[in-house]
Length: 183
Image 1: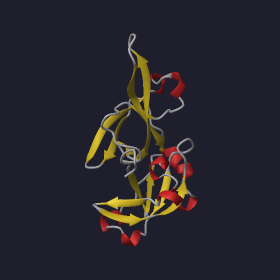
Image 2 (image 1 turned 90 degrees about the horizontal axis):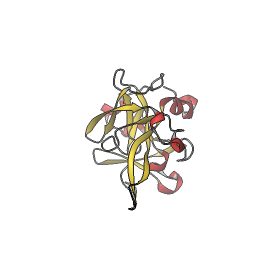
Image 3 (image 1 turned 180 degrees about the vertical axis):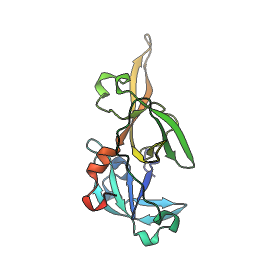
Image 4 (image 1 turned 60 degrees about the vertical axis):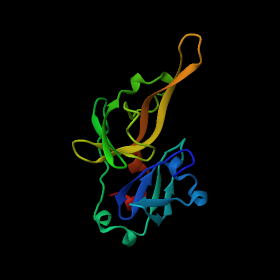
């Protein structure tokens, strides 16, 4: 739990968890833990990104301490890029939420650098949630940030409207992974 709200993470396999870098924070200071079914596990930092750079951090847990059902899992990263209109599912605590990849052209010009976005903002999970390809089940990315726009309606105060969520794509995750962790 962060001061601003909850974050999430996804188990890749071999004791490695991935989350958004801003969820873990500066791990030398925050000392993040992984919580599974109300049990907390201490972590070691494998590699730390940054919110403005590659917004992912890899955390390691002693695999022998994890529940057997997790130790047997190995998640595959998608090798193909997502495309506008593609159906995806985000995994949030207790649910799988369907959404679609949105064309970046529908974003305000100043945020079109975020080319992997989903259109459903309300229910698709917090930062660190996994975005999965519906067809193959591979990991398309990790939820990073909400994209909002400020609109002035008449003479009143500007209103902030959430329009999309950016996810760090699997290609960036693959590039970020140390060679010995490429599954």
